[in-house]
Length: 253
Length: 313
Image (cartoon, rainbow over all chains, first blue to last red; front, top):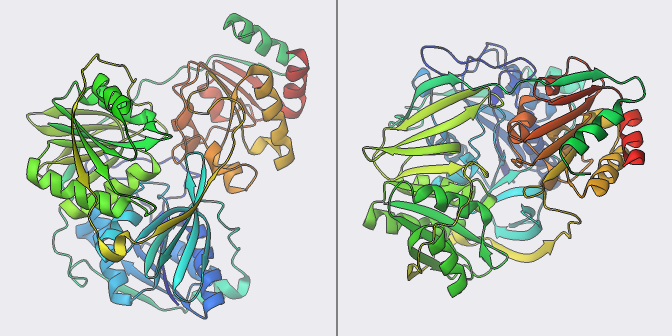
């Protein structure tokens, strides 16, 4: 089975994010990390590939930098990567991103496309659905469990008050929630192997995507009125009484 | 003309749709696009909240409806050219909006907390970086503007509108893209109040130390008749189900009281709860960012403080 996993390199969320004051775009250092939510898609892809004697191809759009994030996913076991780094794509919205990724996926061929439900930095949360529409296939979204057989895929789809079992013929796009599987950590062997795995690089025009106008523009960035910190006390054994007082003051007990 | 996508939830309009209708009626004449089973009382409620017209999208059956729904709305939008189509940030809302943006070749802006129409163009407000910055985005593409709003961005208030004019539109056959089928539905019986609606929410984070210790959160919540929530970290770790996640990629809550147990206060979490009326936080680390937003912060071990609190209640 030909499995494609959409992944993204993001600035390390452990450090505070900031916007470029001129462009209003997120400042992306050369060294970015694999978005944590993508590790789930990669893991599902690797498990299904092992089961079906398939391959896992990563596809990613954004500043390549030193490729550390993509290497992380290759080190987990993905076979190869397709990277689209193009200055014309800076500031792209979800739709342009989806057009680029769908074109790259189309070019590589696919039976199943996997993605996280949303990226940690942009979190538009619609790219998997847009890719599915562009590829004219079903989108089985918010999967908390995934299984495949020869020609069909079945997921448990998260709903507001439980889950639905959803099944579809391949090809299809699936978005997975965090926690769907336990992502593996790269082994030393995996890390070494990742260094020599093939990475194909494309631009938007290589993929035949000419309209990269995002159709939207940030016109202002302002500081929010910050919520003020209240009382902070050290627990010396009786701090729970302060909570009781607060709850009494608020008339809930 | 403003359109609002409304999905059925348990035989009625999803609560987030009533929030959107309340906002939409301040922007212009409102049409609700209703997906699901309905009757006159459902339509009357849509009218009460501001819909002058309802287009009832029918025929989803057991198919995953997003692809066919997007196709139906695209055809209607091409015919009527609304200025704006509003969606709630729900599972189905995101699925339909994403596919529709491709169908119409229009951008879609997610996570909106406010939206305005100026000279017919949409201006969208977002909160980023855990709500510390507010950005405004103008849509430069031609109409309709597609916007997905966060739940609780607007307060739902009935407006006293009369029964709307209802028309039906059947969902089209979109071939393979619409062929995924729901074969079984599982409802997890949740005990206690619903997370999004509860007046008090007790949440737990990594500071609890282990999945078993989430019991502290549940016991405290039971004493206060509160709903239970969680951070993404412990949802990812598999301690509690995704449905309990509060934050950027989870639910948005605005209870009267939010009690954070062993939660450091990552941006991802703060964005989902910072608008609570009163925040009480218990955390070992005095430098934890949760204390920057807490009205009452206890620097202490949840394993000491919470059992004593439960005992004293």
